[in-house]
Length: 169
Image (cartoon, rainbow, N blue to C red; front, side, top):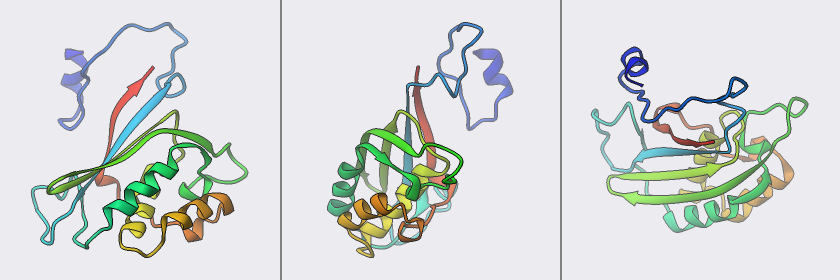
């Protein structure tokens, strides 16, 4: 662990390591991953947080955002909330936990699941923000999933607020 951490950039750290069988694959053997997306939810931006959280100064309906997250839990076709290609892959995924915490000045969106599509978490957050500013409703998010229409979903938010918090094998 010490040797690997010496080679990694300062913003990545190995906290635990153990020897695995030779056929182990870090991506494909994962049982569950947890991501957090940080929003700096204040009227004025912070130069200290600009690399680690998306500044979002607008008022948000946190109750509607939480209601939407509850609806996203479970097994759904997340094609519309990803950049997946229809012909390329199975887009059904299971989200085991989806929550929003208000830890002033941050809003932290946590999403845990068995696997994720390309940019899926960032697209979910973008859609949640659309719910938060009342541009779309929680009911419409369910319709977006059912219709698989990417044009109805919110934008893909920038990567700088996204963190892979844990991987369970």
